[in-house]
Structures are given as structure tokens and as C-alpha cells.
Amino acid sequence: MTEPVEGRSSSFGEGGDVTVVDRFGVWLSKRQIEKVVGPLIGRDVADVGCGYDATFMRTVLDEVRTATLTDVSLAPDLLAHPKVRAIEGFLPETMEQVADASLDVVLCMSVIEHLWEPDRTLAHFRRVLRPGGICAVNVPSWWGKRALEYSAFKLGTSPAEEMDDHKMYYDPRDLWPLMVKAGFMPHAIKCFRHKFGLNTFAVATVTP
Image: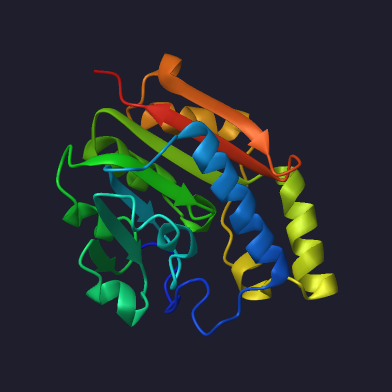
């Protein structure tokens, strides 16, 4: 089964439809990534479901060794960037193009909630990481569901089509077992709420 849902033909942000609320969310995710993952200087990093403009990765392209970017579609300048390996398409098939133990960091921000079978994609994250590698995953929580839908359907400050593409919301008790099922060791997983409790964040390290 191809993921995300059949019929989705564009990446987040394609067409310039990123709202102020979305930009604030990206900024909060960036702060959390910097806190739990640390400097990305000289590291091979993947941003899975990075969005059309790969907003976060653009801020660190000068620092990373390589950037693997995956989404349904990517901006032309990213496709041509010498440090970027661009993979356009759907999950989990796009991850099948990434070699085993080839990355130091895998980032996946606000993507898993769009997948019918997230465990398949998470298993690929574990596969492509080297010993000592780090996987960071952000998803909206069940509390965040109410806030996101209010923003989208009542205020019009978030894209309604994104909310209607959600398949699941995750509290720590929901996300943690998926990380274990993917192959990360329980003691190497931290799973917690952030963004004022509206999101759940997991960071897992591949033990040597």
C-alpha cells in the first residue's frame, strides 16, 4: 500500500500556502531538534516528509555533510543542490531508496499522522541509521487534535486539507510502542509532550 493516502499529489507548503500558525510550529520544532539532536555539523541527515521547501533543512544545509530530502514533490533548487539527495514520492517506498546504516540523523516532523501504516516507515528509519544515530519524530497529540481542527475549520489559520488527511493522533503512550516495534531499544527512546502539549516528540538513539 502506498502512503500517504491515495490522491495526495502535493507536498506541504507547495503553492505557498504556509500560514503563520504553521510557521510558528516549524520554529518550535526547530528548537526541539536543536535541543535533543544537537549540532548537525558534518553529519548525514535525512528530513523525511520535509515539505516542498524543506524549511528546516534550508537553515542547516551549510552545516550538514549531506541532506537526504523526501516528499511528494520538492522545490527545483533543492533538487539541484550539491549536498541534497532528493527522493520524490510516497512513504514508505521513498525510504527503500536509502541504504542501510547510511545516515547519522533521521528527522520526521508532522508526517507519521498522515500514514495508514506508520510502523513500516519507522522501521526504515531504524534500518538506515548508523550505530549511535538519532531518530527524531514529531506528531500532533490527541489534545492537539482539538486545537488543530479549531484552527483549520473555525479560524481558517491552518490548511483544512492537511487536517482531513490525518489518520491518527499520538500521545506518548501511543508513539513509544511504535518506536519499539520499529527496532529501537526501549531504554534508548525518550517520548514526551511539547508545543504546549499539542504535540508528542520522540527521540531514539541506535545503540552500538
